[in-house]
Image (cartoon, rainbow, N blue to C red; front, top):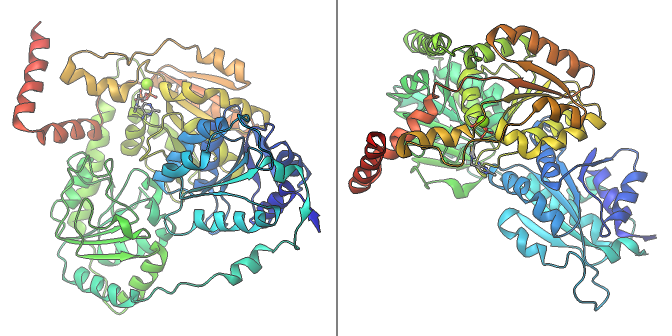
Length: 584
Ligand SMILES: Cc1ncc(C[n+]2csc(CCOP(=O)(O)OP(=O)(O)O)c2C)c(N)n1
Ligand SMILES: [Mg+2]
């Protein structure tokens, strides 16, 4: 049969169960968009900026139903489309989120020089993607997309680029009948988990001998949540999550201690992990944020389980390191533990966690917010109004850590947050991607005013598609996470005061509803009103006059422990500068 590459690409995407693509057409992919337009199952979504498109694709992958196989797909022009999308691609790469990037490419059948978008984007993609392929002939299209999808979704997931030169899209050529994805899968070699049972036997021995075993779980462990709960209860292990993995364990569970367990963690988590002698860490690579900038103390008996073998023995040495999928590992561990008796309920640990959580919340509730919205009160109201399975989307800033410490995520909530690449501007579009994927769930974002303004034009896309996404914008007029870090050492805050934006005007401009919450008294009605708009399929911007006068445990803890580890001479210099500026 004779086919062009655009038709073949759409066939492959349909085979993979893709429902949406995100991007902007240009001369290098109008054929692809035309073929997408013919598809009865895929809807190509026009975005306002490819950066937003990449964050939407990330939101699709992170919120997709477990084992559905659905991942976010970009359909973009080469070079400029790719560089615009690069922030979202980089976030997906470092956070381990699968993504397929379909890009057009310059003509490969002419000798013309200086073509439009003419740079080698495969080179550009190298540090940002797991792999990048350029298709050489129409008959390679389908298998290249299958291979890219496999690469994106297996091992540590991540983004993969497939470039399809425009001439292959424009012109047809003879190709064999394209392979269905199920047939392609059958041809792939199956990898066995060799030696897992023996390694797990070592884990059982270590856990058996532990006085205070504890669990630390990241995003990579989220699929094993039921098994994690079972294990924690059987061995009475307190559980801390990473930031990205906030929804990997339910917060209302009596063994949930908090986010991280370093000196930057909330008191309940510091307490619960204080005398931990065996730590089982699953689906985390001990990166900067969850370790409180590497201030976390980890026992010698560390059992480290991760799908990506390259993360072991980097920041913290492991006693036992197991490269395995979290679910496969947990199933084997629970099977081997079956004969062992359950440990009796650790009442002092449980009441200790409960008390410290309650005290911490009280501290926040009692903080005088001087007429502005008290963060703890905001999150308590939000929890009362939102469904247990709502999707929460965060951005990067003080609002992120306030949510991590004060919003108790229910079961089966999902939380999306940009973590290691740490790209501001994530929340607005990622929430749109999540709502496309989970239209029947509530989707809301907690987003700082600085982050919001980076990508808020993307709400146009939500309005156009009648997506009732709720945006709670923490309006403090500052890039607070940085401003707070500047205040002490510099005694001034250069370049972190934002211009005064009119959020009601922005709402009008993008076709969203607007709600203002200017004090605690307005919380109940404000949140109810936002939910009403969202239920009618209208995106809504909720302008929250939040009080940022109290620091999170994370911010104050990390500042302290980072400073503590500076060389003495540098400590003195920085300390003296701060004192001099105060006296001046
Ligand atoms: C693209 C990008 N630029 C800069 C930063 C550095 N940064 C991290 S948090 C932050 C402040 C965010 O401000 P805002 O959205 O107002 O949130 P707040 O801290 O006030 O809650 C900045 C500038 C970043 N992470 N990403
Ligand atoms: Mg701010």
